[in-house]
Amino acid sequence: MDDRSLVVKENSLIHASYSLTLVEQRLLLLAIIVIREHTHNNELDYIAFDKPIKIHAHDYVQQFGVDKQTAYKNLKEATKTLFSRQFSYQEKRKKGVANVTSRWVSDIAYIDNEAVVEVMFTRSVIPLITELESNLTSYEIGQVKHLTSGYALRLYELLIAWKNKGISPKWPIDDFRKKIGVEDGKYSRMGQFKEKVLDFAVEQINDNTEMTVKYKQFKKGRRIDSFQFSIKTKPKPKEKDVTPSRDINTADMFTIEGLNDKQLGRIARNPTFMAEYNHLVSPTSLAGQSQQGWEFEMVNRLKKDPKQFNKRPIREYLDY
Image 1 (tube, one colour):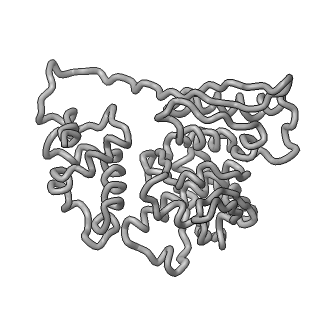
Image 2 (tube, rainbow, N blue to C red):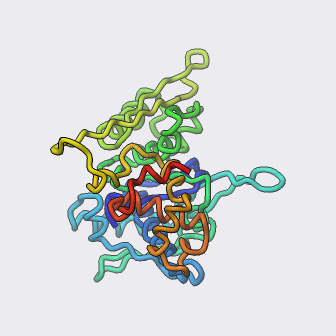
Image 3 (tube, rainbow, N blue to C red):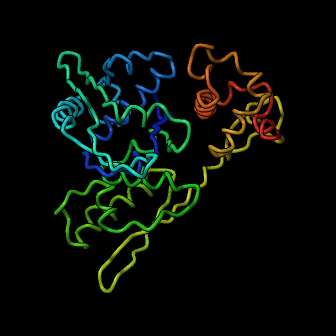
């Protein structure tokens, strides 16, 4: 697990309403990455037989830059509270939309002498984080490692789903408060809400992630009724060019800089790409058994280490 490890959620889970502490959210993000890694490795007993997912405290320390004693204390406390946490989301059914309320975990434990958290997701959560073909949102966990506000982390997740459009929907204030986890009765005055929640979250996102966001507020009469966010991606810092010209045999021809997820998906579906790199996956793995599994696996690998795809310049695969 590193900063490029992907957190992937079905969009209904991204837009769900729930209230979690920062530590609880971080713990769930690590658990999502771990269970997806097991699933990609065809270790399906974690799902089929409710085998617990293990999150080691040292992974939490390394990923989020906290000291060991703080990590041990916070993770132990989170195991006591996370079991009772609920979330609400909407699920499309044949005869309409179901408003679902569920728990995150069915079991959770902290093992003192190992400094390990064992987590088992509920049956309603598992398909929202593993069985994904479309309608998903993903981001690298490194983008949120420096966010120290649970509200900032939730706002980031909400906005990352709209990054490609550059603008979010208008969220009515009551709905927006629920989505980012503000409990009923807390920060009920608008000035308080902006200072303690909204402005602080926006500042953290702008200072610590790849996005720059701003918000507009809309009024009904004299009362603020809703918020809408504009989203821009920060330009990547330019690397100093130490070569006078580009050589097709050098590594810079095999980067994915400037390519979005949709373009990476097109590359992964290119028949030439598939023929040249099908040796990278086992035929018995999920990536070897379905088009969707292959595409997800290859996009993830392209993001983590594009230099392994060196048979031809990566952008050539866009031309089909």
